[in-house]
Length: 274
Length: 300
Image 1 (tube, chains in turn green, brown):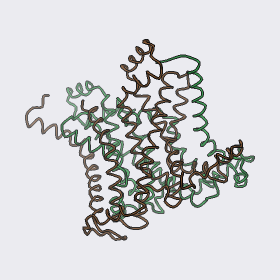
Image 2: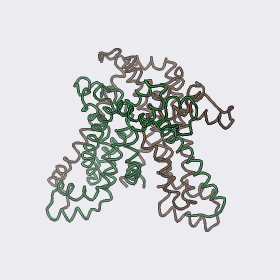
Image 3: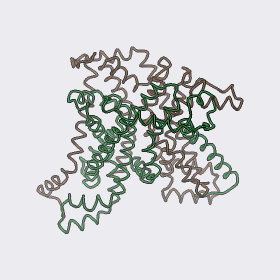
Image 4: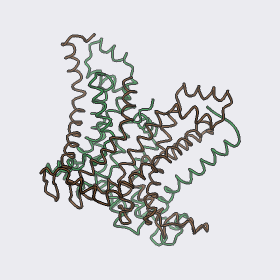
């Protein structure tokens, strides 16, 4: 539905210009501030980059966040792999076994998908504390799994819907079992779907704060909790805060920039677009 | 191949088991924990050691007697209205503009531009925006002073009267792209495109097409966007925790933050559970229409 006209063109360009400023300014500020000296920050020359770029800020920030970066990587990668695997199984059930009970499971999943974490926080922390799982990465891994398998299942189901049934039927004729069909045919065809689901789950887990904060131990501090600590303990050192923030977003932002197509498909699948 | 008999149905159930059992196990744990929270809210758990003695509505009564609870509820309401309505209206405007007037290359640019914050955490955006809002040396006030608009400088999140609104602005900034993306996708159905074409041939104005043709026909998309935003606005915790920690005083406090503080700093665990149930109840109300819609789509 294309339309023409000069006023429209002006409106479009005007909107793009305004949005560009609003969306680029915070990132620009983050990058330039992260390269300044503390003195330059107090001099109120915020928009101009600093005279002498302080790459050392990143070394300092990296030293501070390195263990947390490792914790977050271990937790996010493990949760993503397991969620995608288990979500694939669950999603296949939702997509192919359309029984009355499937509707009930679907409703339970839909609620679980948008469940505020607070509703399960107290029991979860209790379980992790009494089993001592909280002292290891498994505490957060297990917690995130419970909360992300429903999401992964719904997402994978929407992707399995678009796998043609004929593929499966002919394999069935050849005597393949359901599991064989699932792993050798459906999952292979739906690989892009797995990629979308993995990216969405990974970003969600990487960015999660409430559970990570509540279950925090010195050995399992995640990057988000660490960034918040840095913000609290280096109050005036905005250069260090911004360098740490930049390190924190590099991973999800890289996924977004290079695998944006899958990210977008995942969001649309999650939004159940028609 | 036609499953009619009991034996055939059993065989299919056995086939399904391996796919559905792990999912059911996770759902069981999840709903078990929800029930646990529900019970705890009626218990008398105060202090670090669990106490499951039934106390009836004791802690709910305590909750509604707290000023802070009503301040929080008011703030949550502000988040729900101001975090969602402007975002949806703006997103509709941008999505429509992209649909009718996109100049080559601009669409991809604009999409990336407004969508990238969706990949960032609230802790990161909170950190950046704290610096933007910082009253005496921060970015926004410095910019305003530089162009001589000193009158417009403000205390942002340090001013109790307006602090919540500045926090909500961060949320709108972060979620706008997601809303644009979903609404744009719902413009893309073939029938809708044809309806727009014929309305254009009839000489309908652009505004008329938007209000008379597009909006009534993307009710599903709007429902999805509104529900997603409402839930996100209701759950908001990170932004408040990172930027203001509920301050000044508890001017920007929300239920989710109070829940955390009541449980883990004041050790009023029964109260924390009650607050969690209030948040859950609100979320539940929000997702009912969405769930019904999704169910119809899935099982039509």
